[in-house]
Length: 350
Image 1: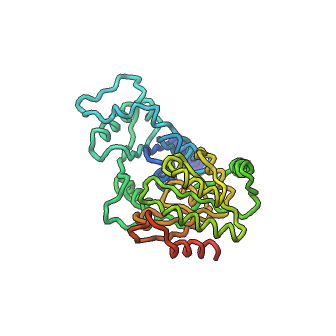
Image 2: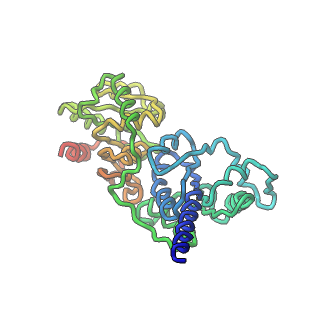
Image 3: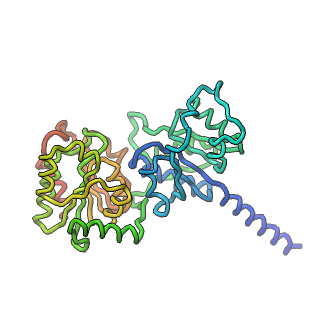
């Protein structure tokens, strides 16, 4: 009799494990690369605490395409191929016919977390209705930005919101500062070496990558600061490569581009995957509060980030070797600062 009970218990345990493995979660994240990277701790927390078999990110593919195979995210889906705008209509007029594409889009998920819409909004109510057309699912709407007086890290804000709304006895956990969120593959490293070789940079030499841009001009340290740091590093036999994306090419004048070229080599108009490949071959990274800085930090690259008007306590990049240099100067983006330049160099040459 005891043996039969043991067998039944084992079968039930196996059945429960299979049931949990079949559960999936999805996060609707419409933000840019920095927002997506700062969502990864929430994705990992959901996956572990809910014992999900997988978790997906629904967002813009140019920002989330690098995540599967390198992070806790199992797969991605394009937000641009879905009619999510239909969910913003008044609930009184919202309707879905049988077999509607929105129903099938959310049919596989037991947990749906969205940064789109607001709590108790038309979007949230219509999303709940859509999910429950096929099965019973939990829908949680999170705020993307914390209150103005919030002082903890943004990732803690996301996780605590989820815990508070889940209705489960979960314990929020603080992110460990040594966490490496993104792991480059061997193929990434090889591709990075190829890209560097194309601009005659030996990947065996000590390499520091500089990305002088950001989504907001007010967050961009004056270009002359980056140029001065690059010159000093070059004088110490450190290879320097500037990453210039579409925003920098559009904002920078021909004279500024020429100044960069006179100091160091640069790579322009790379895809996010290519940027990641180059970063996987670098020994250090310098940047503003930007998405690429979050990427470098998340990959475990020694990252030095210069903060101006944004709060590093809330928005500091996550990684095992991140150093923040914060400035309270009102002319942070307008004038060079020899003092801040020296602080950067002191960290890099320590």
